[in-house]
Length: 224
Image (tube, rainbow, N blue to C red; front, top):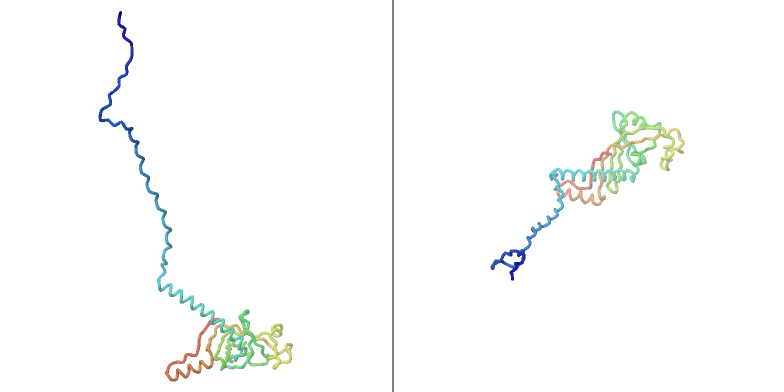
């Protein structure tokens, strides 16, 4: 019997080395993630670059304005509360003064007086309009001196508005044709404000003993 050879195709298989690992190949490690960046802290506002001297000057200015406002308030308040002043004019050679009732109107920045057309002060105010008003509260040691520009008018409506029992001591009624109005617009003033007569007296006695100037209250010159 003839031997037959099967046409069988055999695949060549490479032998596995003895020392080779049979474990599957490790996968490639993923690159490490970078830590998230920290959120930047909010920037601090820049420190003030103002110089100490400039800041001190600004504070002094603010304080001075505050004191000025307080002095202005005090001057208007005292003038209105005292009510009667020595009205001082200039006649070209010397000063003249007389007591007059003052009608203080801060809203109009004015102080009004009723006057008689036949008086010398009307002529003096018309010729030399700068006048001085001296208010004194002697029992409480409070004084105000106001300087301003005066003007005389025959404003009949204003005369009736200013009419009072005090005025009736000089004229029969507001329709008297001789009545005039003097309006003074304050320009500057000086204030002397003491805490009281007793305190002033004690301060003067202490000053006499210590030979120092007495501290009898506040004094201020003010632009109005």
